Length: 628
Image (cartoon, rainbow, N blue to C red; front, side, top):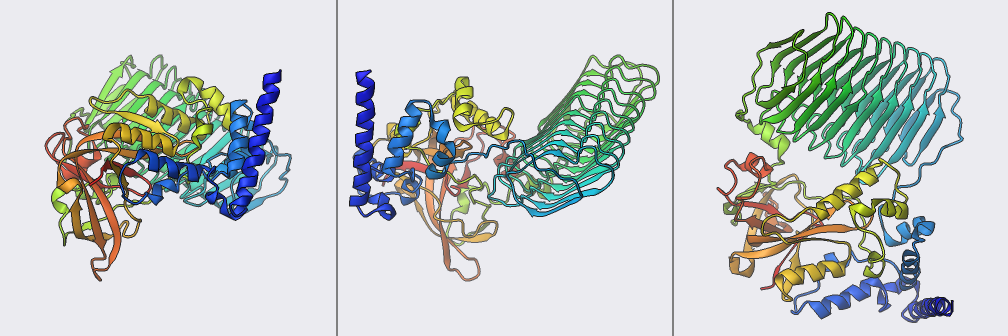
């Protein structure tokens, strides 16, 4: 007991001392001058561990925690006693973290037609439009902002309604790490329609969930048009969608077009329905590495049709899984696949338990199926399935220049010979699209859990909901951090400036420098290469590259990169010849361990180990090397 009292007195004394020092060094507007702030501490840490006279990297040190000395002491104490969550909003705001707001049930009632235009995020619609007849609701320009992180929950939306129409237009387009949830949407409705148009287009890492959507409906139609197009990673899940409905119609048009490494999951979709009419048109066209799963899809349906037309056309690799598809369907059910899987590079499709146990006159037709795909059919109905123009060739087709541009942005990868004065080349979009965050002070970081085995503790600290995009982001980042290193690779995830300095110096020694491209000027345009300088005299060297990961606080995945050459180059406007940027490029000389489907080989041709591959260091990424 005496020891606990002593510890508390020590903490209180330290708190008062730090508050006094903040005032003594110039007050609240000059907290950085206080030698006890995290920013001041990491500056001294650099001086102790980096042994050269190069200027301190302001772009790195600026990412140190903005907490004051007093806040650091207070939040460190809360983290040590596992009570940080009690002041989470204050902590997230003061420490500049990514924390999603809690979306709690709303008691607000909506009893008339609504027209939402230029609508902000962080909202919850609970018991919205329940048991209402007729009318129209419109959501237009909803949560549209590249640097916003909208979190919205539609719960018990339009339940028991009759003949209502809902339109979501330009919804969550251009957003960053959007988290949208539709739970018990349109359950037990009769008639009416829902339209999702230009939904979550050009979004970065969206997490869109439709749970118990339009179950037990009669005659309701849903239209998904330009849904999640041009998106980057992220995923959409449709769970228990249209279950036990009669006469439902669902149309997916322009779904996921031009998206990059997105995933979609359809589980218990249309199960037990009567006379459904579902159409997937231009679904997953021109996607890069799509991951699509259909599980317990249309099982036990009676009559109706499921049509897949122009599905995954000209997509690049990826995987599709049809498991327990159209199982135990009743007489009169028809499923058609037209122009399915005409991929530019081979993907893989698995059909398991397909149309098994179907009764009577069911028809499953494949027309123009599986050009350049690796397909596996296991345990599917032997009768009632017809294949026309079926081809399982695994040889890549000829990829046109327009498709390469869709999958790999021009200028993202280039050859070393391009780094010559006077060369005009495309500059990719090097802007950082991650949510802005800061590192944590090491004193707080070491007291927080950081492993997938402790994900529940971590979720409790940051008040993360189950199955949310934040949970997925954390699990993905933890999985990458815990992944076994590749042959010859040394890797570490760091959440503080001190940890990054320690890792870089452990690999390269203490005479190091850290570099990044100066700004984003010239992105998505042509630039002219000006003066070029090879670091370390242009010799082959090794480096440590650090890339951001999605996490509540700023987290970097750092790893050693052997056999590289690094360059810095002035970048000029091709017309005026004025300097607009100072770029840093890294050239990987040994690509033998890279995947044959890597975007660099798609853009440049050739394959692993046959060519070197160069790229610019993007905004807020960085590379460490031995200092000249």
